[in-house]
Image (tube, rainbow, N blue to C red; front, side, top):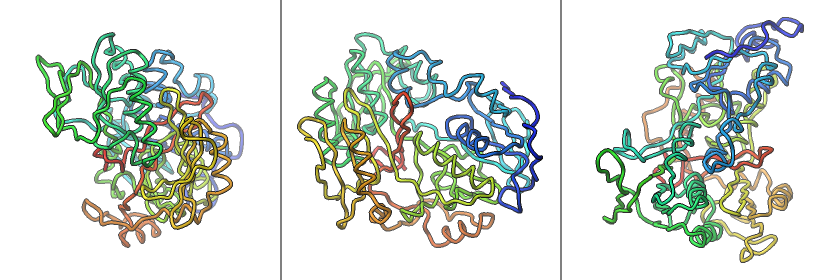
Length: 478
């Protein structure tokens, strides 16, 4: 499927061309690999900042760009028609003056000429390439081809799960992070029998700490979600090609007609193997989100050196997709900028709207700044070494934002850093990476241990909640 905007430029002077980041002027042609939120945000940021050259977006899915956060809530609940999740109308996409090639995933990148080959055999060569291929869900052993087992990443995933949520069916959600907790809340809101299973003692314990995760545990239990927490899931039981239960490490089998697997996600980087780019839990980049000369990464797939945190970070959320895209556009257009956001996410579960700014170390000192946790309306401040590292708000988004602006400083964010650990995989190739990136990789700063999942999400106009950063929680996330 190909969607092409108006041909030609807008009448402005012709771009100088040449590889991005080299010489003066803009690249003549930018190729964005990925046509979801991060890819679209990159294209829009380039146009907004004055880029008039050729712009091409490649998408693995056949759909025009759509929003993922509503998939676990509004679309799954049936409150939204699928079309409402689209990020832009056809008219707005046409006005972007970009070529969209959809339903044709990238399969290889040749870094030197900046050529991307797709599954159809097409080749696209540009002056600059932006990798925005996102992530894919993790799976349980044996789930492929088993009826009644679902993941939740694409529009088709959400619609298929909704069609399986029939009255009277027993649903087991495997995974106690953001996505799992949201899916459990939505299914319970539809009146189904719901069990939430996972290794933590409360939903989102690794992300939120004991105070807020404990309140979430109480909320889910009050609303009728049955909790089987503190146990690992070993596998699935089935009969006749359909799932019948979920097997826990203690031997218990949870009866199930439908299973939702929410065990995190893996960056979509297989197509980049052999390209010479550094790949380690994402596309490894320097502080400017640059993976190699003329090659950048943005969104869920990008793992970049965060100047404030002093370590490599990968965030899976809508806020990061938009903000990082703006930084990448600046760097592509010759306005060098390091990308150093304050991590942020929010999640809606039942009537709870939880907003998190910064980093919440598990051993942080927590003080209530405003409101009352007993009333489930409060803000709390997290401190490490006397410095504020994060702020959380429960049904107090405005107050949480104001507290973050008042108390959370770059010094406090840096206080959340932890010692780096050795990478689990082979040494990263650094020969073809930019000097700043090569220096960081050679120093061993490639797999920092986080004490919290740096989950962030977009405060979109319709107030949809996020997908999680599924990297560092105890859900088997790498």
